[in-house]
Image (cartoon, rainbow, N blue to C red; front, side, top):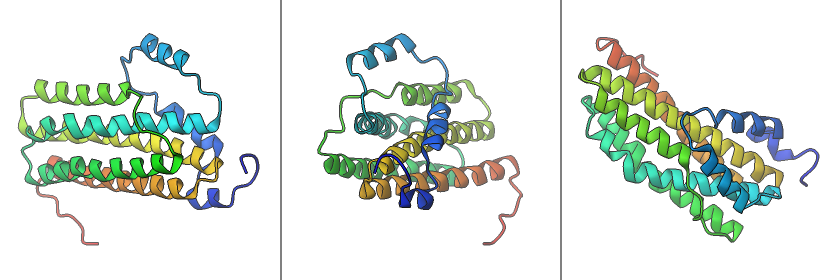
Length: 209
């Protein structure tokens, strides 16, 4: 049922319009080689929703691989023990997200390889450069938090777009797995925001839940 009402869309809060909005949000980050991206699209034209979903998921899969491989450098620069612990947890969780994506690709009977996530490359490179240029330790932690939050927001946009496409195709299990990833990323963003407040106000008492 690709056109018309989908009963699961209200549950996930996703529509085609929200997919378009989050896709636009996902293009916010700077200095991407546009001509290189365009050449890749020209070689592999996307002609239907299934291909759009596959393309989106392959980019997110490559992005998770980049985090797993390259973000550990940032953890070595952390001073706060709580932030270091959260960074280790965040990077470690990419293995779970990669496993979820591989399950989705098994469901789609496709391979997760074949796309390069230039946006994630730029975001990680920017994070590393900011840390190299920052001298004072508390400020370095805060800037790392903001950079990782930017990565989280990009991932939320990308996975939300994929979720919208999966729902259009009535792919219930992939949609469920994508929602789990989105929920975890939102929780990570909230934790990082709390850590940033603690870094800026060390004496602040965290309210009990």
